[in-house]
Image (cartoon, rainbow, N blue to C red; front, side, top):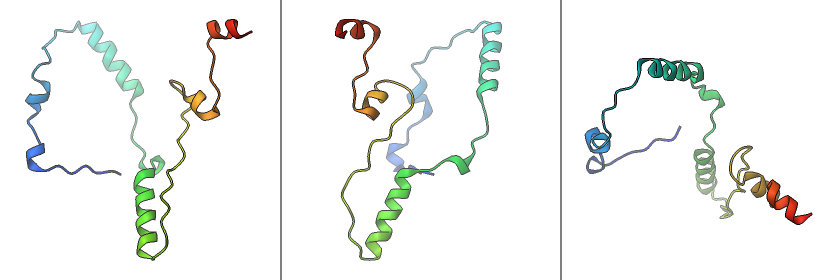
Length: 106
């Protein structure tokens, strides 16, 4: 698990962050709906399924340095995400055409 350490001068009161957010009155049925959605989507965090790749890479690099082995300066390959944005384009190296673009190219 990654840990962020802060100097005392970096820590500010919560009011500084949230003071400009107005107090809103929410309809009771909308609040119940939101609570139901959150309850249906919440789950326990299973730490055994979480891998901090950055921390793992840093520990591996430091272990190599301690052993006197050469450390590569190569960057890790980009991780391909199955969803969102142009990730398919990024993962395959091919441009993904939308319906309008596909009609123009054929």
